[in-house]
Amino acid sequence: MENTKILVVDDESDIQEILRYNLEKEGFVVFTASNGEEGIVVAEREKPDLIILDIMMPKMDGVEVCRQLRNKPDFAKTIIAFLTARDEDYSQIAALDVGGDDYINKPIRPRVFVSRIKALLRRSDRNMDDEQEQSALKIGDLIIDREKVSVQRGNEMVELAKKEFELLTLLVSKPGKVFTREEIFNKVWGTDVIVGNRTIDVHIRKLREKIGEDYIKTIKGIGYKFEF
Image (cartoon, rainbow, N blue to C red):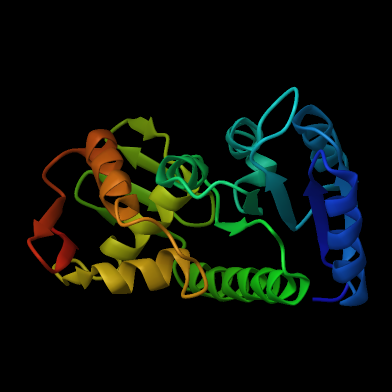
């Protein structure tokens, strides 16, 4: 993880310095920005491996920053984690819906924070290894390209958020297999991430809206499976 580039975007200078100090101690190269607009500029210039976004910021909040970055090809696979002092489910779901990989609650405990960042980077490395094994997959009228992070249905491209794409590729990896909710949480969001109970349901609903209602089946009380 040496020389891994991390961008911290937070309007509180003391939090910037705390995070910078603890990350640089671990060998990371750290950049900072004080608001969402500046964060996008620095991200485009430095191309960080991981971006940490505060949700509540002036000029542009973290959710909108994430949304704009995910729409740029250079940031389709960049790890994005949110900082938030709010515990409401809706803010956590909003952060994950736009393609966030994790959220970390304030107040920040430096050792726990660094551990979470390292876990995100390790998980990303494993996912990249898995993607290299099989890039494009054709199933039904869908073409799922892991390398390009794209989905095509018939002749039309389907726009998916990062977690929607990861959830879809998990389900299609074993058509007919019932994935429990726990399996989905662990493989898509990771064991170190705590998300609201509605998170999977929201992502499944959005996937069905985008790829069609017939592919993903609900197994009541257990989980979901992909059929075609």
